[in-house]
Length: 347
Image (cartoon, rainbow, N blue to C red; front, side):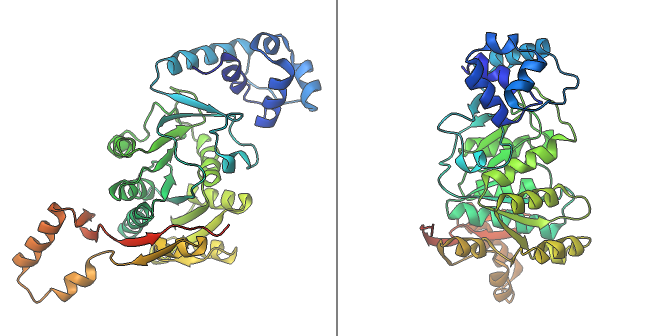
């Protein structure tokens, strides 16, 4: 079980992670920390923090409640100072002091790719997100997204269909699934060795201002961020801004240009230097990962077989789906053996 001292520090929500680490070094234990008043804290961190609706008693109660839940073993946590904490996330501005999680921690030394977009996705965008997640998964690349409806859930589903465990970053407690309709997606990624994580304590409810904070973690964990669709005030644009700020690779999928309401926003990202891509292979080549494309959607094959009787075509596709050669998503068949790849990254 996590140390109470660290759980208590995590509830000093008006402090940055670096300031929490400083208090951790100075105090050494929870009792000493609780004895500090606001003046003491200001003197130690070198600034006067803005404290609203916060009290030691509330922080202690929240830390005790989190400790009880962690003691059950269903939810685990990872602190900033621990060796398993992802180094790339720790290097961003104001990284999370701790991460609550369910599932399996990945090898953080391997690159992850964020696939993000609007909840109100078009069919074009959903197909593109699923194919990206699937193609990344076939090359042993985990997808990071927010488990929202639309683009997020399609990307997670594609990654899982390829046999890879994606990473879902929540804007609520890791013991909750939001929206509830995505419980099946969440269960599938966990069963496939994936990870659900959050910086918010167990039982924390969804709040609007949590999502921009969540988005900095999505980009912070990832080597690249791919924006599939981002109309209006989409949170994907916030993630894209974080990617630029954090020095991550930023890409725009061509689906965004084909979707109504996206073009002006996407062109702004392209003006900022984000390349336009059409498939995961475009991202992999930027990373120095060689991948030979040998499959993909079956649209070309269906066109070539259109002279056959419709019944024969349907039977052939169903046979290949049942025997694992194809998967079907949103009415489209996709070859399962989409890539043969050799893994090497140019550092």
